[in-house]
Amino acid sequence: MEHQSVQKYYGEVLQGSEDLQTNACCTPDAMPDHVKAVLSQIHDEVLTRYYGCGLIAPLALEGMRILDLGCGAGRDVYALSAMVGERGRVVGVDMTPAQLDVARAHQAYHAEKFGYAASNVEFHHGFIEKLDELELEPGSFDIIVSNCVINLATDKAAVLSGVHHLLKEGGEMYFSDVYADRRVPEAMAKDEVLYGECLSGALYWNDFLTLARAAGFGDPRRVEARPLTIENPKLEERIAPLKFLSATYRLFKLAGLEPACEDFGQAVIYKGNIPHAPHEFVLDDHHVIETGKVFPVCGNTWMMLKETRFTEHFEFIGNFDTHYGIFEGCGGESPFVEGQAEGSVASCC
Image (cartoon, rainbow, N blue to C red; front, side, top):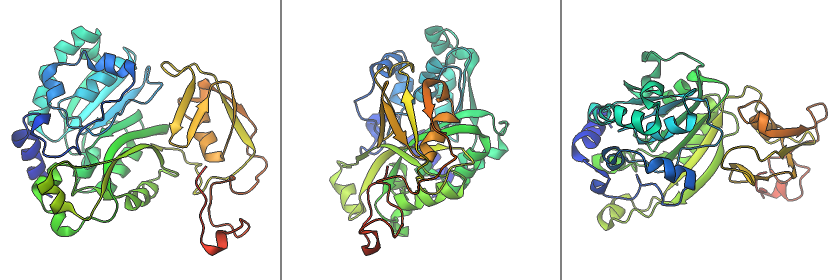
């Protein structure tokens, strides 16, 4: 799909979220209270022109430098600007001038609301497939976010490669997007409405994992996912039999991550000192770490906590001196796991 078609859909066809024809580009109502409090201060026009599908507000953001890919009218940029504080910075990139006009028009409003947004926010016009053409310093971002935009990109591999280039070592990409249960047929991919509605540009989920690893992000972690019901009978007929879901992933830029979860006898203890998470820390959909409890982890999870912004919030037990094989319950292809040779695969750690 051409950039011009997407720009027209989001700059002219859609004048607000009520113009969407499906529920693909919609965020669930459930969200943490502290996020609701920040969003309640966002300008109404910015909120109206929001087309995201997830919640891209990870924990421990104070002082972070964040890049938002496909920032649109700036809802997430302004929300994140409040969360990073005066010492942090949020940069938004979008290819649709009409959306950026809305974002920039309300910069003074949010500066007054948050006290510093005018100085810790900036917007750039550009394509997320060509991040190298923007004046952004390589290795300068702690976190890169995106909300239901990569499915619209014409070259998704280039997006992920550009993200890896701009992230600091130990930084992460935390983003929500739409995925398909199989590869989208070419005819469907050319449907401008389905593409603009974040459906026909969606990656097959397994192709996404392959692209992420090829870009240098070992061990992609899914945070959450929800099925998309579309809720438009005519469009449902056009996409059948494909199924879609909205999922949030985190990709860490860590050179030492291994292809599988390896066991080194390590464990962590969460201190409970991250704001808004006193009782537990959620790394992904299978690592919910209760405060004060010794929590065994694989080597990859250890690095995701030890060599990132999360390190000060954990105690670390063990090292990498002794290897014990695959982490129990993580699967893999070991012939030593009973039933593995017959094709069974255990759930991941």
